[in-house]
Amino acid sequence: MFSAGLRLELRLRLRQGLSALGALGFLAVALTAVGLTLGQYPERLRPAGPAIGWAMTVLALVYANADWWLDQVESGLNQRLRVGARDFAGFIFGRLFAGWLAALPWLLVAAWLIALFYSQPLPVALALAAGLLIASPALVGLSAFIAALRVLMGSVGVLIGAAALPLALPFVMVGVGLTETLSLAALGLSLGLSLLQTVVFAQTTRWILSLV
Amino acid sequence: MTAIERQASSIDTVTRPGAGDALLLRAEGLALARADALIIEDLDLELHKGESLHVRGPNGAGKSTLLEALAGLHIPAAGSVERLTQAPAGYLGHLNGLLPDLSTWENLQLFACCGLPADTRTVERLELHAFIDKPIRSLSQGQARRVALALACRPDQALWLLDEPFAGLDQATVDGLADLFTAHLQRGGGLVFSSHDRSLPRARLLQLRPAVDQDQPGKHSAAAEHSEDDRRV
Image (cartoon, rainbow over all chains, first blue to last red; front, top):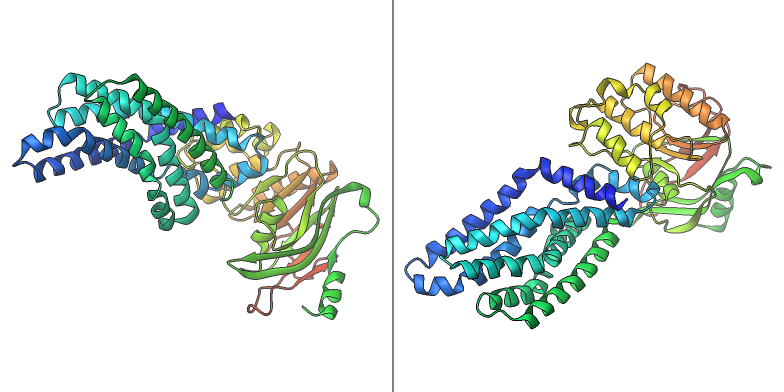
């Protein structure tokens, strides 16, 4: 069942590549808007760039995955799998894992975009990429959780899910910190927190989908 | 509900006496609510091997909700549902449960990977090969329903719970489906299905009536035979 979910998700992601481009477009527009607003003060924009980029990337990831479970629920597949499939949870976890795999190249492009838009040097771009990759399981889990709340409760679910966005703040802080000082302790802390949040979000998402 | 009403209701039990050893499904004192409104109350039913139960009623009477409850998808407001089968039930709701971006073949593959492979003979009988490579979103309503039925009607599942299985199908497919149901019942399987206008020979009837208001939840009645105007498949 895990492999069935994994293959399905990868297949759908490949066919729906435009939605990933849409999310990158959202990121580019958001970064440009910040740049235009602070255009008169480039000296202020440059140090704030990584933090702004991080926050925008989290939002873009949530946007990119907003419809994650919509097809599964609206088609009635979710109900059929709940009744008959031998391992419903495995199927959901497979889709989550594939969603994380699909997000990796996307996040690397996002890090490059941030560095490009805010004229960051190469080491900062690499630190941004490393921070995003370490946090990626939790960020993907968060976006999957918000998407699951959406299919359960509609727009109210998105609002409730948005309340969980501050859980991504530690990653933003550590990720931005990495662009200034490379700290193994910070890396380890971020990785541990990322894995912990991933488990919580994955289990919560599975539980929500077992209700709809 | 008064004591007299409850007693009358308990008589409306869809049960075939004397076949307790071959029981596939049992619901006792079932009460179902939708959006906080009670739509079915105090329903008892049993389904034995080789039996089919036709759930009938107007829109809003609770047919789909009842099938969802029997499948374990809807938590009853009261009462219990017991499925006495080894394998999970073959369930088809009013939605087909097919991913529109995938082809017929890819949907069949997906279900097979989830431990729910369609039976080859059923696939042939429902003639899915004619559109096996087409995406579901390009199929007609009837074609998509055929794919969904092929995935729901598996011989290794003793209990089939089908919501409007005949909807959108042409007469030839309806005939093929009726043969499929008959073979399933002869193998000792059980079938609960809802339909507005079609039934099966020897299917017992559960007639649901819509709720009028909050104080008068949907009453149900059971009949051992069809009414005269029933349209048989």
